Amino acid sequence: MRYAIYFTPPAHDPLTLAASQWLGRNAFSGDMIEPPAVRGIGLHDIAFNTAIPRRSGFHATLKAPFRLAPEISESMLLRHLMRFAGAHEPFQLPLLEIGRLGSFFGLMPERPCEHMRHFACAVVQEFDAFRAPISEAEIERSDTNDLSASQFTNLYRWGHPYVMDEFRFHMSLTGPLAPSDIRHFELALKEYFAPYLMKPVDIANLALFVEEEPGAPFQVHSLHPMGRVAARRIA
Image 1 (cartoon, rainbow, N blue to C red):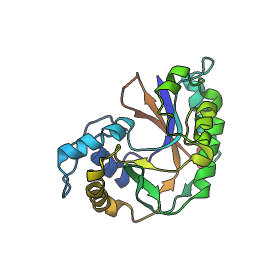
Image 2 (cartoon, rainbow, N blue to C red):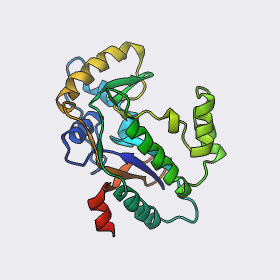
Image 3 (tube, rainbow, N blue to C red):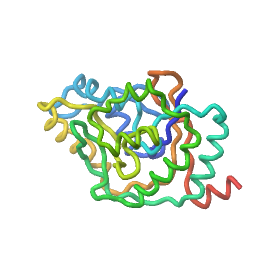
């Protein structure tokens, strides 16, 4: 089993519901959902090009998937995650927009958010002791050819290349697209998500996702509210 610490809005948030339909799966319930009817793109094209993020579920990665260290139990991870979340106050991201990283699209803040970057760094550092070291086989399966020296160092040190100074908040909505599909998907995504991107997103919880077995879809295990109220409940 692997665990991951992500951000995702609550189950019934309109953005969560819209993104789940776009991806074709709800990471809270595990239910498969028929993609939406979108002008200019067929349902089969949407389903094919969302296969990679569909397995992961709608989320932003903070602590990438990891196996627990031998001396760590799930209950230990949960207790620490509840305490950590309760010790950090909620905050807002700038408005999200459809953005592109390489050949895939996702939701990204319209301007950099240092608060988010510092918080993500804190999550990576805080929970690294819970992670089993990355194996040589896992490194070999990673696509290291395109990594910078900094990203390669992060992969060895933290188990994931895109952390610390390399972190970019994003919530993936497609896999890598063929050049001929990029413009069509960009227009479709902007039209489909426009009604859900009109207000800032609250970073008010941390989500623990689980992968029950290799290759299985990731699913929300639990949400952990941030802030003083959550801290008082834990105490």
